[in-house]
Length: 356
Image (tube, rainbow, N blue to C red; front, side, top):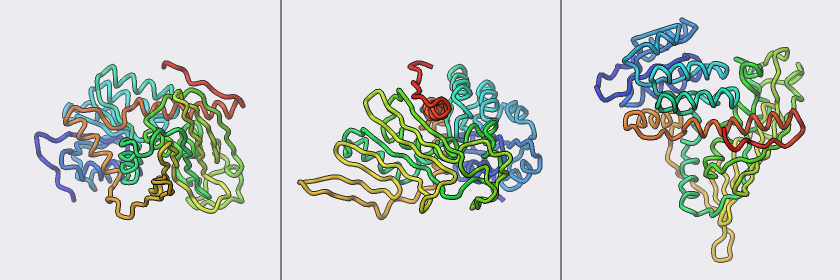
């Protein structure tokens, strides 16, 4: 059983949601962070909450997250609820004066995300979204190369989050009303966020997209992540989008739960005037002295991305510095996803508004 740290300088946190991501990522992340103390946990399922409290030695247990927010001792909150329950606990926590890190995606759609960003600004609280792929060793290394100018001007990217047979057989992943979408919003959100970050967050201007549902309604398709309820399936199983940016750059995004390809792919390729790169595995492609070159990285540091993201959030709260993944950047991701869905539904290119 873990021992609670008793230090005045620690950030005291509460975790809302004791399900999979809360117990697998956020709670262990805080437990590993020497400057954080887990003060309370809340979950509508009391058994889940008490199990988490016992495992992580948490003194306060609630079934109503509002009771957790009423604790003056708590400085910051993790929101680890399903997508359809991201907005309200986040806004309530910010209104209660707590700093917040919310699981990805920021929300089911940009409208909800804007309300969350507005609440953070209104209350002058820190708001971060848990897009942990930025903290991977490959991502951090490539970002340093790009920021140093080694790849030149990044003018195009191809981001892919593709599963061959990977419709989740649990939870609300196949329910559009609760999840907000399918693979685009579940796994596509990670690779899109990472790619936008690598590109320096150019301003998106127009988006085109198509979505397909060729497998999710069929009972004869194998589920490597469990068999899902085909009657509940109301999301896409493949989505494709193209984004044009104000600086002339472009991006193509693909995301699937099911597709007839050789193997799962989770990768992004960025194309620059002085070099290009593949993220997974990390390789940089260029030319020197009229000879093309390939650079590989056989000994990258080992990083636990989920732990690193929690530590970064805690440090931002402690030092009163900006969080590394602010709500505004996560909102940009969701605005693009919304536009892909809208374009797919209308068959037309969608222009992203200049001002929210």
